[in-house]
Length: 473
Image (cartoon, rainbow, N blue to C red; front, side):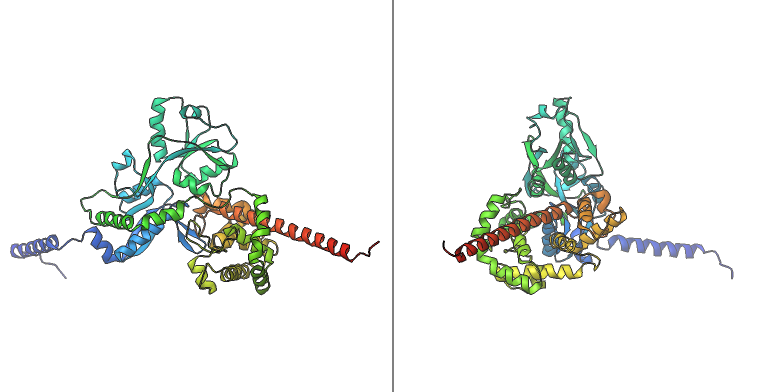
C-alpha cells in the first residue's frame, strides 16, 4: 500500500489542526500546586530519620516533623507520604528536583540555603551547641576548640558556622562526615570515641535522655531558626497554605503543645539513682504491688519484672505523661491501649494489666528459638522500639556472624539501627536502637535490685520469726 504525499491543502489542514490543538492546550487551565496536591489526594514530604524529625516507633510513625506534617496533610484533606533521605544536603537537592512537595526535616535557615529554597516563617528557635563528654576537659569558648578532635556533619549548617568562626580564629580545625548523622556523632561523644561535635539544642535535649555522658560546653553565638522549605517558584499556593497553617497552629496553642511534648525538660533520671529507687520501693511500690502481682499471675510474668518496667516508664506515677504523649503508669500509647482493650490509661489497674498483656503478646510473637532469659530482654526491647526493628537487628546480627537468638549479641547491633550505613540496608529503617538497649539495661538493674531487696526482706522476716518462736531462756 503506497502513501500519497499530502497536498498543499492537506498540509495546510494538518497545520491548522495542530495549531488549534496547541491553542486549546495553551488555554487549558493549569492547576496551581495547592490544587494539584488536593487533586492527587497526597502530600509528599522530604525528611530524615532522627528522634527530632521522623522515625518508626513501637506503634507507628513518630517525630515532631512527622506530627506537624500529618496535621498539615489533615488540614488540606489529603494523605501524607513520607520520603526519607540521609541528610539535609540530599533533602534540599531532592526538593529542588521536584521529588517532594516540601521539606520537613528540622532545617535551620542559613544564608546559603535561602539562595536555594523558600522557607516558611520559623516555627522554632534553637541554638547550636558545642557538646563534649562529661568528665573531659571543659572547652571554654572558641579557644577551647583549638587542638581538640571536632567532627560535624558535612554540608550542614554547622559547617557554615564553623567556616565563619575560622575567619576569626584560623587555628580552629574540624573534620566532616557524610556517612554519620548528628545523632551518631553525639553517640560517639557519649562513648568517648569523639571529643567534640556541634548539634542543635533541640537534638541535644532529646539525646541527653539516652546519652547521660553528654555535656554542653557552650552555645554558639546567635540563635538558629527551624522552618519548612519549599521549592523556589512563582507558584506560592502550597507555601501560602503552609504559612496559614502554622499561623493557626501557633494561635491555637497546638504548636506550643507539640513542642512541649517533645522538648519539655525530661523528668526521668539520666543515671541510676539507686538510693532514690530503694526509697520508692518502700514508699510508692506498696500502692501498686497487688496490681503488679495480679497481672504477673494472669500473664505468667514475674511481677517484679513488671514493677521494674513500671518504674522505668513512670517512676510509678499513675498520671505520668512522656514527651511523646504516652501516658499512665506503664506509659501506653492510645494505639496500644486500644490493642490491649483498656479504656483509661491513667487508671493504674488498667495500665498495669495493659502493659503486662502487651508484653506477653510480644513474647508470644517472638521466634520459638529464643529462650529465657533472652526472650524477656528481647521482648522488652520490642516493647520500647517495636518488634519490626527488633527483627531488623536480629537479621543484622545474623549477617555479622552473631547469634540472633542471644540478647547479648543482638544488643551489640541495636545501636547500628541509628547509623545510615546500616539502617539503609534494613527493612524498617532508622530506629533509636541505643535507646532500647538502655531501656532494657535499666529494667534489668531495677529488677535485680528489687529481687535482692525482696530476698533480704524475707531473710530478715524469717530471722525475726525464728527469734519470736525461740523459747525464752
